[in-house]
Structures are given as structure tokens and as C-alpha cells.
Length: 378
Ligand code: COI
Image 1 (spheres, protein in one colour):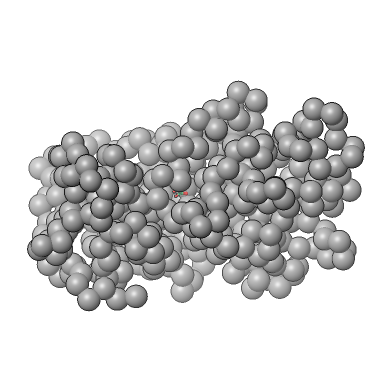
Image 2 (cartoon, protein in one colour):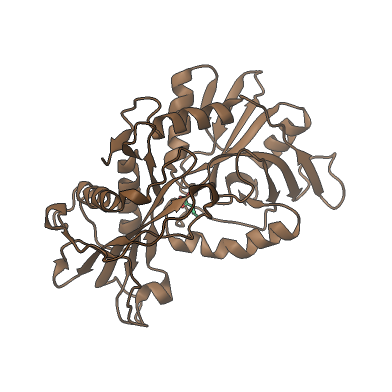
């Protein structure tokens, strides 16, 4: 969609930072802790429309204490990455999908619309200015965090009349401290719900993330790393932690199938999720489905040994295998104990779809293979 009133990348002004911070060692990057020398900001007000975009030295924001973002969570964000390829070119991966999702989150949050191409060009410029911050390795990347907030200085709950779109960038290594392809453990407890029909689960708004921290901590108390988010009486499987979820199994018809929950309003339309589906479909080696999976079906399949792999996907974590599941539910199977609490081991395979998809994806991102999905920054 095209916003008739938008900022323009051709109006971008650049104020270079006078000093450069030391770059962190790319082999010991902690996710989201380091920030580059510059940021992009674009202000909007209902009376004046969009200001000119500015790239300026990285700095704190100054906000009115009544800003709507601080009280009512008028906030949305994106997660994307710039990769330094084996040919030293810097690439973005399917960035228009992030721009489209950002626009749909803005619409749902009653924040103003903008032209996706113009924002992408401003982001490209920011990465170009901070290009030395894109790690010189294929084990790390520059995480890009476009953020959009309501800065309305009023405690009345109404459509923002002031807003700020800003973008910061951060060199990152693996998202999970376990690193590499170490399998995660999940806690499935139907009392833990991330999103619901008619809600905002399909939008990348901060309000979907902050409230999950306490439940993730609860999972950690029970020796699990992440929550497997269930939904409704049927205990539909939705997402895991901050990741979309994939199950590779032998289905009831005896076919190998890669399945992920459909975009029915409670699932975040992940760029990595879409890329997994597209790549697996292109291989044509097994059935690829987007359909609702209920906990009962997963448990039955696990008990009959037909689960081949389970993995999560996301921009931050890329592809992450799941190695075990602690189910604390209604006891959907007769074999479950009275306390309805059971741990399931999930097989992990070397060179299964999770690993292959990870390799194919990173081959494209780091320029080891040509792809129409990547867009050159420089
Ligand atoms: C991402 O995968 O990019 C995300 O937005 C998850 C975030 C919590 C790091």
C-alpha cells in the first residue's frame, strides 16, 4: 500500500558522529547489547505531517512523560538483519516483507502510514553510514530495529497526534546463549496464552512481548528454556517463545510432512517462517502445510514415534531445534499421569530439514548463493 503522505528518502539529512565507538569482538557478541554510531529518526505530527528523515549520532530520546507509548504501549517494531557476504557486499534479506508488516502494525496501532520504499531506502542509507558495524564474519550480522512510537503528550486514550519512527542497529551473534544448534526445551501449559483471536498476535507490537517475560521465567524455573504457547480449549499449538514453530513428522497417512500453524490472526507472519515454507516447497521432497495442530495430535504423534523434528524460527534466532517438551495440561492422553505432567523427548537429526533450511537460508543471506530475496546495501 502507498501512503499518499509520506516522508521521502531524498529529503534525508545526515549528521555524522564526531567519534566512533570501538567495535565489539564479533566472536563474543551478546544479542542486543551493542549499538552503532548512528540512528535514523523521523517525526510525525497530525498538524504538520512527516518531518524530513534524519540520520544523526546515536543518542538518548527525549520524551514527554505523558507520551502515549509510556502509558498505553502505542509501540511497534520490526526485526531485520544486514549480512556481510563472503564477497564483502552487504545484503538485506526480503526487507519488503518487514516493511509491509510494519505498515500493517502501524495501521492496527492507529499510527500514521508511510511509503514502504521510502523507509527501506532510509534504512539502507543508515546501514551504509554504519557499514563498519556489519560484522566481518558469517557467524554474526547487524540486527536492524525499526521502531514506531506514539509520542502524544496526553493521558487521554486517543489516536496519536504525535509519533516518532526511529531505527537503531546492533551487531549480533546467536540469539540464545546456548548458541549453535543446541536444542531448546519447551514448557507447554495451557494457562499460558500469548495471543487470542481478534487480538493483536499477528502484529509486531511490543505489548505482545513484555508480558511474556514472567512466563518465560516460570518456564526457566521448571528447567525449560521457552514457553510453547497454546490457545483455546483444544490447546492449539501456536508459537514458541518469540519464534514461529515447525513440526516435521510422519502424518496419519504415512507421509512426511512439514507443518506450521496458519496465519489465522494469532500467529506472527514471520519472514523466516515464510522463507522456510518457500524453500521447503521448492525442494518438493515432502508435504508442506500450514494448518492448525492441536496438542493432542502432537502428543499422539510423539507417543507413536512419528515426530522427526521440531524447530522454531525467527529473525533473531534463525532456526532453532527443540529437544524436549514438558506438558502440564489437561491430560489429553490416557497414558498421562494423574498430575497431567509429562516430559517428552523430541528427536533431533543431523542434516534433517532444520539444518538444511538453516544452511540454505544463510547461504542466501551471506551471498554464498545468488537470490532474488536479497537486496544489496553496498
Ligand atoms: C526477532 O526475531 O527479530 C524478534 O523480534 C524477537 C525479539 C524478541 C528479539
